[in-house]
Image (tube, rainbow, N blue to C red; front, top):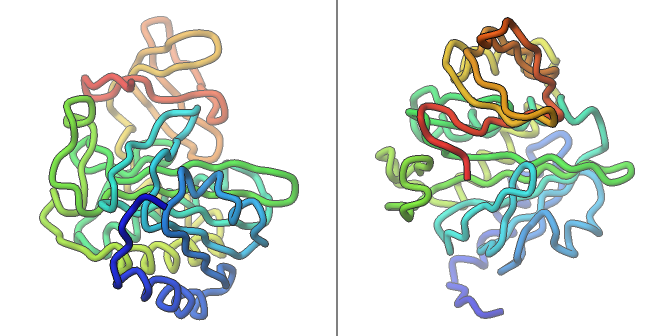
Length: 257
């Protein structure tokens, strides 16, 4: 390991183990000092369903469609939750609602969800989710910006953190809140999750540019079914874009790099 680990790190595993003891599905916590990505760590690959794997530092996290999640040293939270395999659309919905709930526990205000599962405030990304399935297990990767005071030029218009939103939060406390929020979401009904998503929907009614296998699509988002996709009004009429193959390329005048 090439990162200096402070004494406070010793409290992570017992604290998160105690958090898991209060949960229904997530029952075990594994804590790593440093890893390229919790999604790709050996500990994650070997973990049984019902495990959360987190790291003091993640250096090469990745997001949906292979996008890079910036290395923020020890400023953010990175965790992968190993659960039983199920429809990816439901996992994405539950994860987005859980990440939003965890953020709101510290901000005391409602945040937005930019379909399918980015957590945003004033169109700036606060947290993101990556869902992958391998055999009988699913891997839910969640990255959340906690203590960042700024971002580099590439991200300054697209990212924010709890600290930048006026809340100084301890990463361990954020992790605990995230674990409990995801556990609640995973056992919630589809109806409850959809209602929670739509109450926070940040994309409906706005214009955006989408990447699809058939090429870019631009238009106004008319409606969203968080587990299926979205209906977009384009210059040539309304078009449905399925969740599995669509991503937001530009929104609010900021292009996704």
